[in-house]
View 1 (cartoon, rainbow, N blue to C red):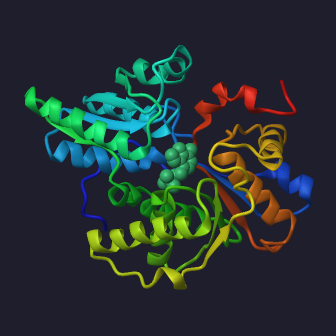
View 2: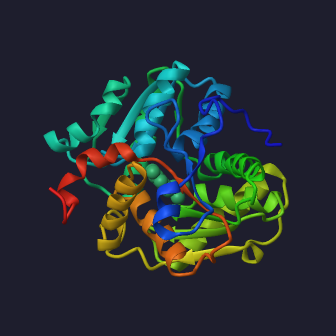
View 3: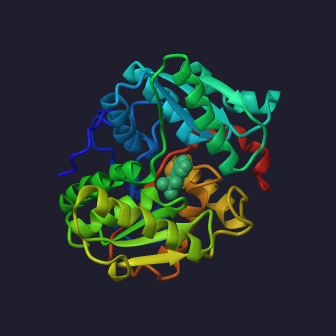
Length: 327
Ligand SMILES: Cc1ncc(COP(=O)(O)O)c(C=O)c1O
């Protein structure tokens, strides 16, 4: 279906499980979670699905080292380091973070996976991108073959396939899923899922809980990647504004990475009701949005709903001081 080369990292479908604790507590059946945090490599997460395509491209180009950029706790960086080690590629990580003991500790797993880490200070995304390109040029001059990880459209293909995987699992349930709740952030995961959903004929109402941007910017980012998938694959799925897509902006609070009382409550509720860990930046607000929709009627009773746990749980271990109600 997708012609791009793919390096196998997500070896089997991730579990689709009932949230039976919440079903009991809320008195309604049909609540599910898709465990994309349960994968075999590097603690898993959404970026591993993208890395199947990025590493596929890197290997096709005969790269011998992958470069990736992100903050000290970046899930993309951690999973790139882990996946590169599996694929036999070297990995260089450019962190836009201080070279401080605290940030070195936050990026420890990257070095455990064998990556080289460079700390370029707390610069913005643009400067970080330029530093990464410069590092790739420097490697080329030394005779290396670098590949920079992160092409949004290519990475999004992982979630086109995830939509198919979830649909297949959903069809095995007595009442198939009707609603899927997902974090709204930089766009590739969402755009890929929406594109896959369209290819399937829109079985799911897709709910995006914004954790990073205001609505206009989130929409723009998703549209750009969504249209890019069409161009790259040659597949045509119709217009994005006709897709069954719902934006939920009420959980953004103070913005990316800033907890809200509801997101903290959601972390605690998922831990104590389901034994499932979620972290402050991406999944807590998505869980808060999911519970809000289920409790307050945004997702009507009788219509089965699923939240996608996109991973990131490793960050929880450096987030203890962000809890207001727990020590
Ligand atoms: C755990 C987790 N969930 C969700 C996202 C959002 O994915 P995207 O950037 O594709 O919107 C990220 C992005 O880094 C992530 O690490």
